[in-house]
Image (cartoon, rainbow, N blue to C red; front, side, top):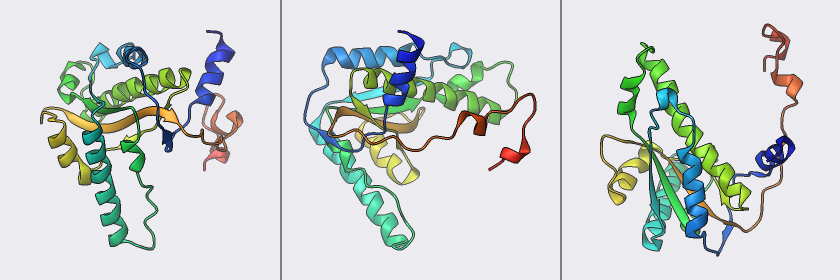
Amino acid sequence: MKPDELLKLMQHRRSVRVYKSGKVSDQQLETILEAARSAPSGANTQPWELVVTRDRKKMKRVRQIYANEWKQRKLEDPVHYKGLKKDYVGDVSVLVLVCGDARTKQVYLTTRQAADREKLFQASVANAVQQMMLAAANMNLGTVWVSVREEVEAELRELFRVPKELRLLWVMPIGHARSWPKTKPRRQITAFTHCEVYDRSKLR
């Protein structure tokens, strides 16, 4: 792939929240999982653990879990709460629960501070997710990050039998986009790059 083709792929990727029917083939899914497998990780720990489901009943249950969370938070703050509904998690071909084995942080022998170990761990799992998203986009499949907050974690953990030793970090739907969101404004390169030292005049 040429550099400009890779850049176009990155620009093509969107956070898709509206899906249509259509199957993600086993071969496509395998490609996406292979992308995760090849992701860089701190000390090559490869801390990601992925729970993959095509079960419609489980997906509907996930949708209900997120709907209940949305209703509760809206009830608590009906004026200011602007959280987006996540009904789309029940409308896709594949749902991936992204977990991480934080015990792998013990391998970071040169990193003494707990916060630094956590950064490496989180970045490692995020790398795998980003590569899966790019692989999906390359096949014209939509994905989106879905946070696993405290309000939904226990139910998701029970539904998918996620061991207590693992962190349950994100949910990633994979499916056929009904429509691709328009490009959102992006900062100019000059706005976030600094030559030699940080240019405080650019501080937002």
